Image 1 (cartoon, rainbow, N blue to C red):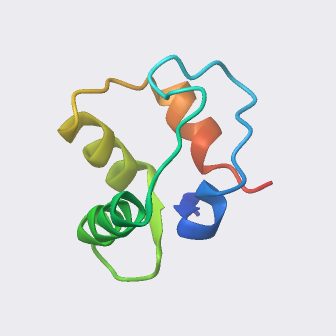
Image 2 (cartoon, rainbow, N blue to C red; image 1 turned 45 degrees about the horizontal axis):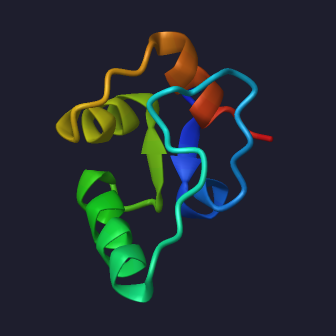
Amino acid sequence: MPQALSLSTLNSLSPALPMPFLPRSVKLDEDQITELREIFRSFDKNGDSSLTELELDSLLRSVGLKPSLEQLEALTQKP
């Protein structure tokens, strides 16, 4: 069964692999958080509040990032 990245997991990510395409430290205001949630939901095709590797890959590529398969797997592993 493919792993998925959930909204709650995003808050507690500490990747085991280097993720050079992700910013180290970002401070977001409430409007930015709301926008991110809306973007997340637009890529969550089945509405289960999680992103499969394929959905996550689509999201990251839509903003110009090019994660490797290894990075996608690391992001979607369950802790």
